[in-house]
Length: 618
Image 1 (cartoon, rainbow, N blue to C red):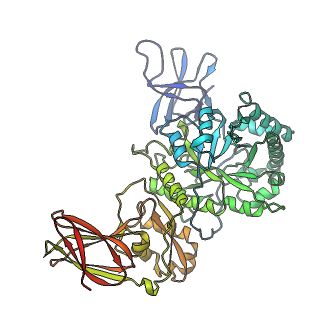
Image 2 (cartoon, one colour):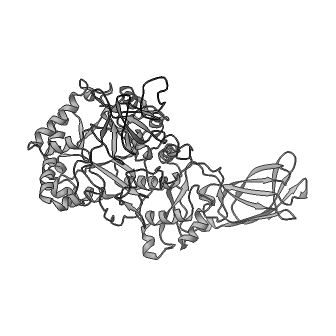
């Protein structure tokens, strides 16, 4: 077998990557890394013979994000070590613009799940499953660890909808659809899953639940009507679409005889881009299936906007158009979701948000995930499998665990945990500002003088602390928290009764109050969460309600005032309520107490060696 420079090759088993060609003798070239089975490498030059083997120079991205260059043997005896990566059956397509989405309501549940290409317990993967309790998990059949599946059902994520993917090469998938007997191929493929490893995938937990609830049919098996291949030969592909329609029905029917569900479609993102593509070409599948699978990607964001290509939300038109005649609804599963440089940019490689050439920071990635979660929640989508949480080396640029390209710990999982816990609490949050202050809630001014041992305290810091409900609309208020990548933001705070531009709203209601977001990020997200702003030329109207972000996990905000030479301070625009007030002298003497604000008034704050006390003077 002969490879060529820049060609992608894949390891057929575990393969040593050596510093130079050869492996024999005391001075054999050192092993730089062991590349697991299924690792994709790039050939960087011509082959060299050494020690009776043919060695190829390759470049590989390891699971920890390191990029190494070295030499790998093509084969040893009859054992093939490196093989050509098959050409994908679907090519990148020019994505169509997504129709304008309606205003989003605040999400109620976490819809972000896991795609597990590997279940090796590396970088805390199993613990991440326990902490997130993802609503959906997709797992490859060769990664279906019995211990993990049992623990998922028992305690790690007992309510997760677990989907299996049985890997087939692209050539094998195409052969099934061209066989002339797609129904028989569908039944045989289902039988292959049912009999795998002595019926492993038919087993149930003692509670009666299957360890794997459903199985994908085929994966990205055909180019869609949006592709160049289809336009060149529509009649040929329409015959394959009909074959796949029949294949899927037979596949699910055989699985359902054993009480196991199936997930239809799972086409490459952007290939089948209109509801009519599904209605016209797959009527039997739509009539038979409950679960419909979609792959949705974008770059550099999932959020629609200028400079962005995204397929996020394409499932919605299919869901709306494919309502069953009996009134029941299909359930949507996003079997792959994420960001790839290749989406909308066919000249780019298929690399994720942590690619080396054009990486995104974690806050920018989180923008997409938070918005996408809100979108999925509008339609009660089962969940989205984030590609890849349990990653293999050749997909390391999509990783969610370990470290980023600078060696900093990734906190994406921490953010999803915070999101899930915040939505599960269903407490007073999300905070909602009143449309307009009522007579009982007229804003007040709190003024006063700080004294230390009876003398005016100059240069002291006076802090008024309250929650988002109390201080969210005070322009000078800021979040009382240390900066942390583990404190994500979510757009679930509603505000009404406010009028002004988007920039003015940023300054008054968001700046300093939300971590990890600057004005450009706020501006592009505001339009996505509040599309009606386009009709008012960027102005918020007092009679409308808008969504704003807040930081999850912190509900303590502060306004800080430095006392004058005579110890005076003033806080304006304060809503009635119970606050904490703190004083810290220039010499670090501190005191705090509670104060109820129900009107404008003046106080004296008396700080001594023991405590802080309040004396009201008006």
